[in-house]
Length: 413
Image 1 (cartoon, helix red, strand yellow):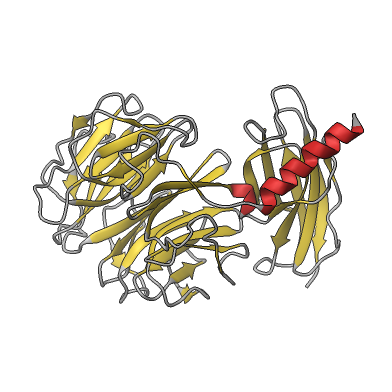
Image 2 (cartoon, one colour):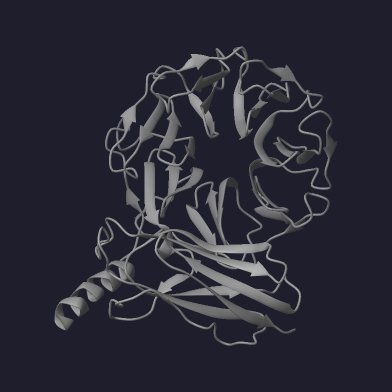
């Protein structure tokens, strides 16, 4: 039995050592199709291209074309009940925003039907559409039934992101605009002279991907901005998972930062000689997906890129959470946890355990989520860099459907 366990563990570690991006284009309209946008809800990933909207419910293993199949779709967003698709094109005609309330089975064209849609974002029933042609931002407060042009009405809006009542709009040339009242009024932030093609909100932190100047970060809801170490490339797309930032570039593939933008590494294993323009990044279950120019969709397990590393060559027989080391620490520490082989869980990775590893402060507030997704059985270490947090007591919580444990750690600077 011990030999069998070791063989399974070796197979897991071999797969990690040979980790790379895998192209998943079955049913997507050809392996060389360009995918401009991706969006995920709890059980499906949607992809937009010149053939409309495609959907996968099996992590990209196969795709089906939805009935929205004769429009260019360059923007997608989802909320708990609907999927929204933004149509348009360089030369028109422009068809505006389409909506599906049954996970892409059927679509209707909304009343915003004559604009070139560059970007979309949703927060509950509040839907925002960024348009081209200097028409700015349109908003709907009733899940897309009715639309109104906001006071940001003279910019091409290439990206949108929402944090509560705060709405961020990335524009061509004029940087980032902010509305603190759900789109009623707008002000230009201090990032005011860049073309911003991508925005991602993570709590009070906002990442902005620009053309030619890399990624900027604001840690105070857009009041101030600093340029990250990735500072001289075209950024088309962004995704964030805990401390890990994913950046899709223009012609240089994917860059990854495991320390919240302090340093970056190009991670193009599996692309071969194909250094693609990455127009979209999105996370579903335990995978990061990217939409590529003439490359379709690529997929990769998050665990290969997020700093959650397998560390032992044996499958454990029980769940466990170890004390972080070092402790006290400044500013980095490692957290080790174990996942056993159990019913419905396979060691080869086709089905794993949904794992959440979250850091809390002494008041019980969430500080960071280091991992939230599936992991196969094994023992892992997660790195936490607390350089941007004050000294004090913190707690880390490891939870699955069948196990929860919390431990205390101390940051001393």
